Length: 232
Image 1 (cartoon, helix red, strand yellow):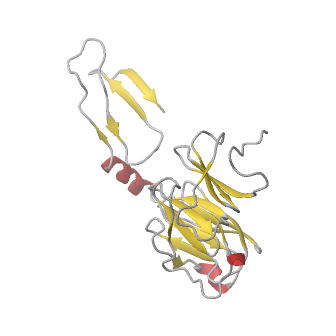
Image 2 (cartoon, one colour):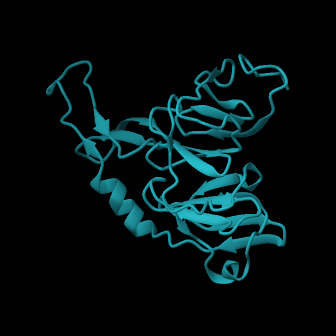
Image 3 (cartoon, helix red, strand yellow):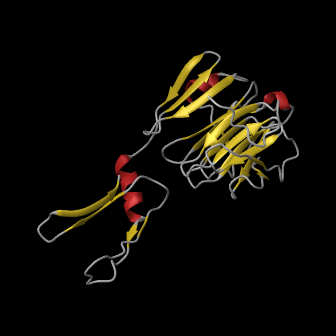
């Protein structure tokens, strides 16, 4: 291990790190969020829009929007963490203090985001519109609890949600539909006409994907043989 604090002030605790699929890293610290675009070698602090510098957790929406646990509220950024706006619509803040801070975010396979909160009611929220609005997500057995202490949330590729709380590990099965997800990807991808065509030496193949994801593209001749392939 090597210290990768860059320009983060010495002695400032980093509460949580969030890594987006494109490599953007955001550190939630007690003096605000710090952003790195070079694998953590250097960091830049961006507190524009924050009234409270203490940050506790970081999450990402499927469209790339950044979510930040900022005391008793949630902040959003659509410009890679450079500026922040409140995302408090639907959050209960009556009587909340900075001790009732948000602890973790988890994004399910269908894009639904879950946010957990320390020792407050409701203690878990969900958003289906990239963090614009939130609803109480204490469904099922969670509906029997108030002020439950949360520690960590995570989700797998099938959309199942797992929660580490003071009464053990809980899970919520997702509603991920592999066929529907495949249809969504196929309907939002495109391959442009290869050009120049005909060509003797080289040709450009341009394609568009609905979001950042692993991809493989292959050229197949009229006999069904793969003559070129790239990606994964």
